[in-house]
Image (tube, rainbow, N blue to C red; front, side, top):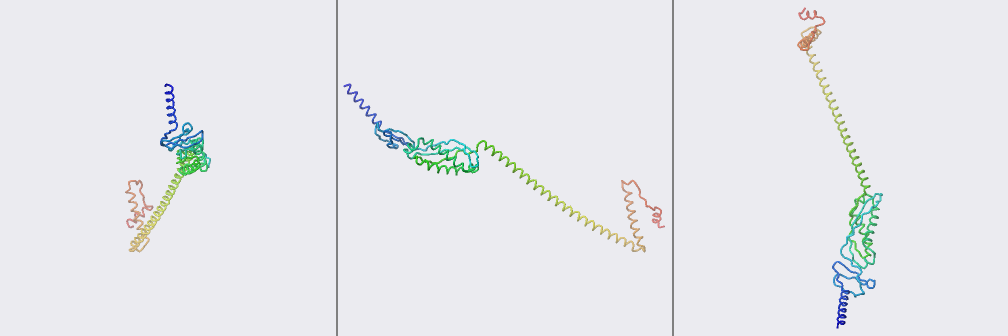
Length: 293
């Protein structure tokens, strides 16, 4: 009786183990690869699945969700021998678990290495300025190239994003020095242009001032000439008016000159700064002339 109970209990436990070995519940977002005697048998889809107990084994459990691959940073030499540091991130999805398992040993490392080598190849064909300003172009080429190559592994490449693409520390220092030199050159050119414009304006102003000064001197000379001419005409008329009642024209001239002489002596005598008295050279003759003798 006890032996029969033990045998029944053993059979019951064996049945439970067999059922557990034959039933597989695959969660959503995963696919399991089943092998039979070490050979691929089938792929279990999400949900309840039945396999042959003891003969079939779940060898790989793969996710069908999008996988993020971090591509390590690396130094890349451009076409013009400049060194830049790049890093990227890739987004992949497994569409065929069988190919992903048996097509490549480790698809994560394989894709990372392929992205790095392809990125070096693409940037190596570009110069520094193009590499720094063509992030979208690099991304498109990289995505198209990698997607075609990993398709045979049953993996779909959604996209590759360029995280960083910066010059190395040495290149950054050289670029900063170049930018500083360029700013200094532009400042010098701007200063020279300003000085040139100032000199042109100054020369133009001096030329205009000289022209205006010359015009002023010309107008002043013309006015002086007109004044002298008017004064001469007035003197001529004065002499003619004085000489008209006199028979001797020389006496008329002497009269006018004497009159001016007396006026000038009077103004000199009335001046506060006057310290001398001017007398005629022939005083007696002048006195006789003044008394009419």
